[in-house]
Image (cartoon, rainbow, N blue to C red; front, side):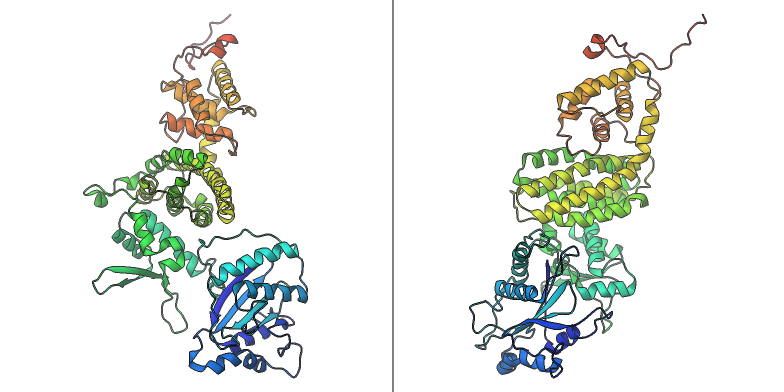
Length: 567
């Protein structure tokens, strides 16, 4: 059950809409299900009553106080059930309206001087509550935190009425687009509202910025209109952004302040985040050395997540300091990814925007690593999605999936149900993007495995089974891509058994969709192998492992063997 609260100044205008046909003739049988005294005129059921009669009755106290009435004296709340919920009766909707108004404080059950209000039903799945904010004793209604209180009332009603239980909020979510904004976007043929488009573009500009000036320059480079609010001294106090071509009825741009897009996009909090970005070396900003190195930027970002995962696994509060950095990396990937993964990454960035916020405040640590990594991804430019840059993206996405799941667990332990759900949904989108990015490199590795001599392949399989058994995991069938990676690592001088023990022991594998995929990328990172697997045809001589000695499996020498003499 979802409430949506707004305020206005035209009682008659609101009622005319509620009793009218709707914007798309979607209103059917509009009628009252409840009112302040049970005797309000109902234009939907009483042929003698009109919308004007009902508006006059609701506005009685407002007229009596005259100029002392609040400018926006109309409180409007729509309450909607979930699509899978049963159809509520009028008497049940009556109870819903009264409980919401009681919790908000507009009309408590024991208050004889409560505000006047009505609840109108013109569809099966929702009602509209309209109240005027002047009490019977002619004082202004004193309501604060009305939306969270309406949310709390709906959580109780869901339990009482046996409806779908939604996750409770904690007041950290960004404000959603209004119905008017959604309808405007639909009429223009846009998939997203201006508010949502701006939020995404502002986050991407922030991910690329190292200073406040770079941030505002990035907004302009993204094609946004930018308006700065300045103090008399000239200092910037705030900022607003608008989409080109987005105008109101008077033809003026529709501006959104940063704080209205999301709480963490206000200028003060934006400045705190920019403080967590490593400054450029002299001349670095002009040179832009990473511009041609999207793969290197992605590989560099991947190395920073091990420490993040350790803190998350321990359940420490200081993990809260890393959430905005994880969000910055996802934003940067979404802005610079190849076309094949961009849709899923944009969806992941949108979901994680909710998972990145909570009331947990840890002692400020050094948060530069992830923010700086995100900035380098942005400045390195767009990846083509093939070759080394595409494979480095797969490497980073594999780690991000596990990070998102660890964040979901971290939030769930603290009762942050909305954030935990958002993190799990983020992981779903990241998995889909990973499958797209990893398809080619994993196929290449499996092809490479066919060139490994049989004795060496058996040795790698034994090493894989042994390492997984030590971590209480059982190898589910052969892992050719991992075997090919071990062959490349051994050719570079590394011991496969030790590598596997280190890779498996980094953290748990229970949340991994594919244990083989996770271990492939861990081993490639540990050995600093290129993200893009290169076909190798020889493996260096290594002493036989204890397992190979026990099973009398010969050690691999060279894959290019001289031909056998003819019999």
